[in-house]
Image (cartoon, rainbow, N blue to C red; front, side, top):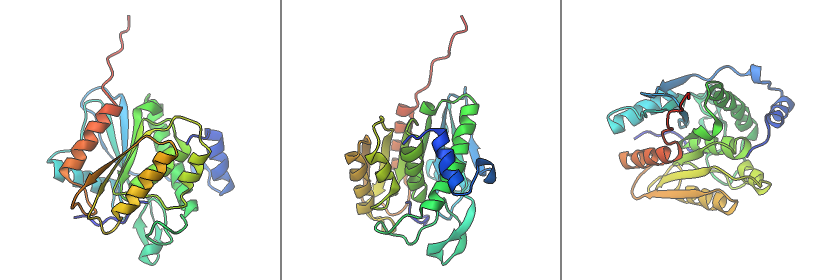
Amino acid sequence: MRTALPARGRPCAGAMGALWARRGRGVAGMAAIRRSVVSPSGRHTASLIFLHGSGDTGQGVRTWIKRILNQDMAFQHIKVIYPTAPARPYTPMNGATSTVWFDRYKICNDCPEHIESIDSMCQGLTDLINNEMKNGITKDRILIGGFSMGGGMAMHLAYRFHQDLAGVFALSSFLNKDSAVYEALKRNESVLPELFQCHGTADELVLYSWGEETNKMLKSLGVPTSLHTFPNLNHELNRTEIEELKTWILKKLPIEAEKSNE
């Protein structure tokens, strides 16, 4: 079992730039995020961004899923991107350096979020989304999600800044009770991307009740959600969960018919 630590809408690009500029970070100021990529076997018409849990890497979570499925999670038309979080000091590890998407004051759901580090990473991941758009993939053909902290990061990115993505998935993840995601959605009037959420009832690191509370709160704020419960599953992935995720991915990102030149 892996022991990644827990996880934690649509303003225009100008609003996002102003937010990050106020905090002293221009888009050019962040190094490109490393990634491991599973290319589609056919024509590339959609993209999936899978964010790892804290302390892991993109290649690490890709290998984990490959071990569970006995093959890569691969599709005919979808590029699967596994980014790696830049190393940074992580407060729950007494300031030791770790590959985490953002910092935490502590691992619980009733403390403030470390919003500065969350917003900084939203900038870097927005660059990743923009790269896919430069390759001809529209935002309604891009999914983002992840395991543990990666799922929390994905919810911040999608529901605060990219509400026109195809969907979001969060596996063994949660949001803090006073999350900036909730505050953003209270002001939202847009149609929101669907959330596919999975959680094990035996999770001792990210309690099932934290995930359940996150799901209920997002649903009350207008997010179309589903919560898939896995009895006796600890803080980990299993084959059934990944197969259900793959089914949902193909529902959100179906194969597109080849366009005729006539």
